[in-house]
Image 1: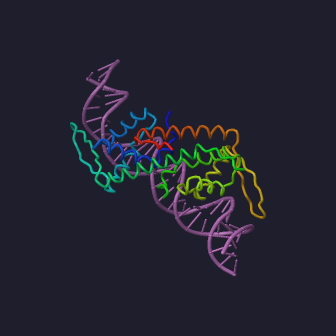
Image 2: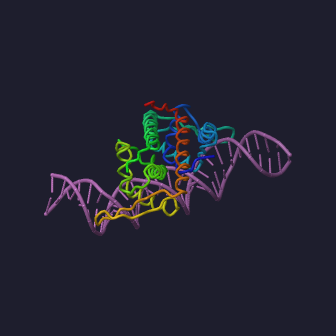
Image 3: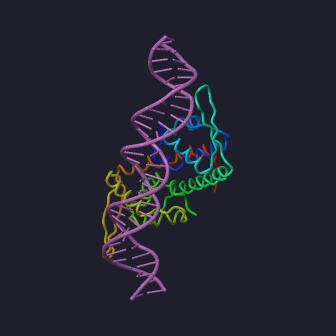
Amino acid sequence: MNYSSELLKGTLKTIVLKLLADNKKMYGYEITQRVKELTLDKIQITEGALYPTLHALEADGFVTTETEFIGKRVRKYYSLSPTGKTKTKEKVSELADFMETMKFLLDIKTKTT
Amino acid sequence: MNYSSELLKGTLKTIVLKLLADNKKMYGYEITQRVKELTLDKIQITEGALYPTLHALEADGFVTTETEFIGKRVRKYYSLSPTGKTKTKEKVSELADFMETMKFLLDIKTKTT
DNA sequence: TGTAAATACATCAGTTTCTTATGTATCTTT
DNA sequence: AAAGATACATAAGAAACTGATGTATTTACA
């Protein structure tokens, strides 16, 4: 099983920021594998979604990068900047609040007819 | 406060279906007001998002409609069809499961209200 | 030893799902 | 009388994906 894709929309940036907050530095491919593993294959981040997101986070100044060579193959590590850390807290708490609201909304049994 | 708009993406259809499951029949404007009221203005469904969604649900056979006149003004009521009821259960439990996964991923502690 | 799978980056056309604006019309409140 | 609320609807444009495609290296294994 994995979720219908529209659910993930809007949460990807938050997931990436949170992972970086917990792991100091990570590279793209590692992020996709970590999410896959942590969610037991329920959430699969595609590369077509991830790389543009990482580039956008960098353009916005929320992450910094450093390139490393593993043999001849390049690996690009991402780390949170100070503003990125602030942004992460904002996004995570916003998402937490949103999920509380959604939980309430989906539990209600109001027969007002 | 209200949520950055991308969070709502993908949840609108589920919200609408769930409201219809709890209230037998509702009309569009009523749905926008109910959500606004239940979420204390945190979630505002725009008409530009809602009406196309309702039309899509009807085209997919998940809802049926009946028109009523209030004076000279038309009001279009939406009700769940049998397949719509099944779909609602699927969508609601999928979203609930997704939120659990996200909570785990983000290490979010849910408030015990 | 050769080839498939995994690792690792990237771009881009097309799709879905919204926002924002616009339009029409009626009813209610001040 | 005018403003705001009620009630429907469509449409251009933006945002955020999917899925395909591309390049190249490394590892597993038959």
